Image (tube, rainbow, N blue to C red; front, side, top):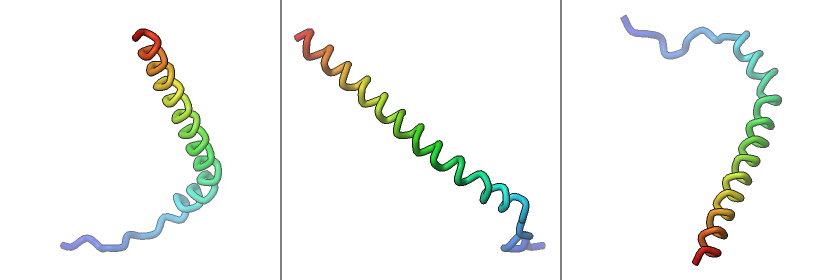
Length: 54
């Protein structure tokens, strides 16, 4: 027996996504930006340290 292509739409899950997406998305963007800045500062510090040793 074939499975149906479209399952029954889950309204409670859609409601949860609509409620929490405006909270989750900016947090992910902010933490991603902070992580990028931290990684770049670490790379800069390592490169400065290597340049000063030479």
